[in-house]
Image (cartoon, rainbow, N blue to C red):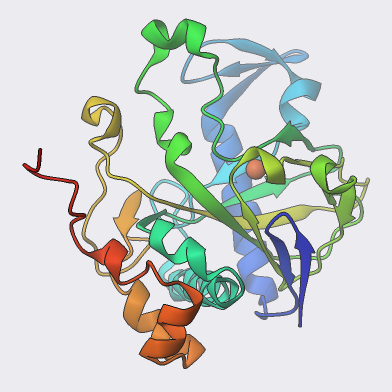
Length: 283
Ligand SMILES: [Fe+2]
């Protein structure tokens, strides 16, 4: 079942079963990741990477990012295939979303490797949107190139791996729509400001776990090639950024649309796969 809320925010319900063993291992990986990142110093936590001291409460109010597809937090061999399957399910949901928003198709060039966010009680996220590079243009000279790939994000998918008390996603530009997710749900929403979203604090005794993938357009040559290269890979999780080369055939298979239907609903789609006339040497 799916609900389309407007502004491109869609909620696909109960699309995947999540074995308890996946959650158990993920929570173990979360703790290992946290210990690898921080050292305790009284009420403070010291980042092992930067040496910066942070208030423990402030750190625990943020989710912990766990990269289940790559060391050191990579899932065990026993569970790794499930995470690849989860990324295939996210892809399948995005293909369904494209039937609702076919014009998005020409903007799906690559995807980021899926990763999880684990929210402990009290953790939350302030309102933000997913193609915000996180700094204003005035500081561009100091920081250019480090994080600009997010400017190319077009749409996000979040798969929810457990039921949560609290930890709802709130969309301020959809009249503060508050979405409660259940284990096995996938949300799809634009990366732009119209789908600005925050996460309410997770209740005591609960957790919130999401598996997140960004889908974007444009090459890494944007911005002087200063961002991560996009790779040709066997699978969408085999590198940080991977071209999505099977979009057309996967979409036709998933939707069952024939060529005339595709042309009818996204007339520019075939044209957008060719070099435009106004590029390359024309005056
Ligand atoms: Fe986000």
